[in-house]
Image (cartoon, rainbow, N blue to C red; front, side, top):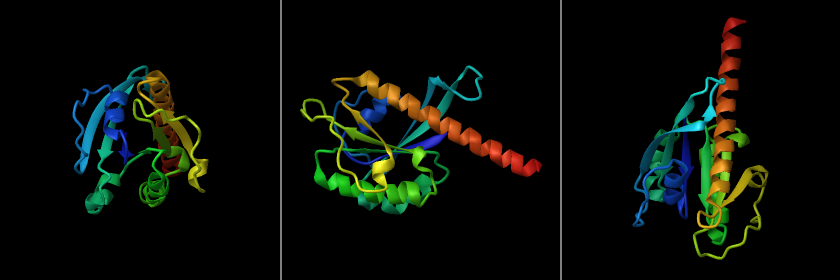
Length: 180
């Protein structure tokens, strides 16, 4: 199952944490895309007992890569949009990301997760940002890897489970339509 993590503050650090990849000590904006393959033992398919394998495509948010986005989005099963709620321009930019990566790919809102990422020491509260429709209907979680990393990890596992369920249900419907 592949899905995307797109845009903004702390995305790469968050991606590394959630996939249990190596730490990044220096910040470098993601150039194009960085693919992280990982298995999560807490997310299983059809109760087989083994963890599901995932690909997380850490997509660079710079508009100069926009021509690559259609190829990156092909066959994705979910989208995670990471943003800094303390930067007003991010609240309007996520509308474009939602339109491009979710709506234009005909993904369901349940296949999208918004993460308001708070950088360590930012002192940001976890009040919900004012989001316009349809963003205000999406699942929104706050992340602060300094204060409560396990809460973020648990929310991510819930999201992965919902993606697996969505993909399984879609495949079941497709198989039934072939049979009937």
